Image (tube, rainbow, N blue to C red; front, side, top):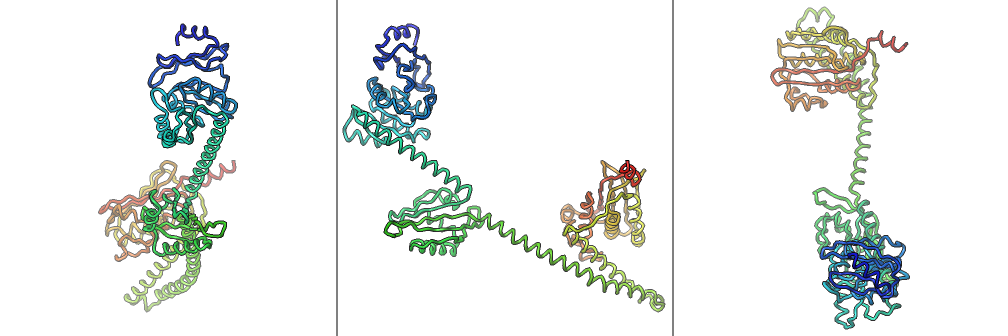
Length: 581
């Protein structure tokens, strides 16, 4: 609309308000008060450019919104919004006066504007004319019903056509009602109220259905309903998802679901259904079915019969709760309790073994030592060797019992540690001194490298000595005859590292992965080298209990290096002075 057109509208005054649509000029709503200056708005449509004048003369109850215009939601939101679609101003004026008191009104003068306005303003209802330029009402209705965003808006056709064929065409296009012109205001108001009430109830029902579907999805609850009178079987979306069944006819759904249930569960469900059809309530029936991923699922089934006023069973409803996760948790709980009970029995057994084995074993070792001092034994090399075997085997058995008891205490969390400042170099020297005779017997060269300065760690002195003895003993036992053992103690990155290297057979990467498994000797159980397979496991647990770790590096055919890393600590005199300060 240009300035000349605007001056023409002002000159007409009460004669009417002009809307320019393409090149066609309409006299719109004659008699309207032209004292209010209309709001100009330029709107670009897909088909054409439209210059529009809002009908401010009709008050706040109505706006003319062309295609792509502003939404009518800016009006009072407490009243439903109706969209009037008609190209005849007289018809629009009649509908306006009949509905203005109870509704917010929007107006479109052709089908294209109506479709765009329905998408943007989302009216509660559309009052649609049939005969319009460009696109008739049937096409508009079909377009709206085919669009997911507008398909739920109820449409009432208001047309001058009164034949039965016209009415059937309107209803087949998707309209909810048909009103013939001229419109009776009271009939119009009554039908609009009725269909708005139905829409409101349908919206509430749809919202409740969505909430129920969400609740079923979150709670993993499916359901089905069997109407016995109509022989109609309906299955909820959640149950179809649980059983991996598509939305098919009732009989096909049952056939698809049948293949997933075990025979026992299927017949158990049929017996429950027979009882439900007889009017009995069945509760907490467990059914097993095969899931789409091949795992077994578990459902808790409850059926209930619905009866008529005469007491006749007319339908059966069923809810199925997926208890697979619950049963898995219950199974884990049972296994946990069984493991705890087994651990308790193990602790009792080990505690008893500590007394029952150590007492006679100490007696055997004691008498063997006495025999070794007998002159007759000392003078007989054969007997002396046999007594030596008794002492060696007894000490090995005693060491194994002690290691098993220590491992049991660690597993039970009952290991007691006395953490103090320990001289790392002196601890390594003490362990080397105790294992030196065994290394000499195998003609091994031992080269210690302790570096300069003192190295202190925070550790339990007895347990640190136990770890170093075990690592040194392994380096001796699994070394080649005449091989080498290199020892080092150094401080790095706020920790002290005890490294023990040998020149034995070495370990493969696969063997290293299984190195710290209890009682796994990595193929050495058939060799002449004695061992229990729990020494390294115990060393690792003790190192971790003291805040450290054990690292392993090995090259097959070249040897292995075991490194014990413990937190660096202050010497006792410095630590005590800091505490006193």
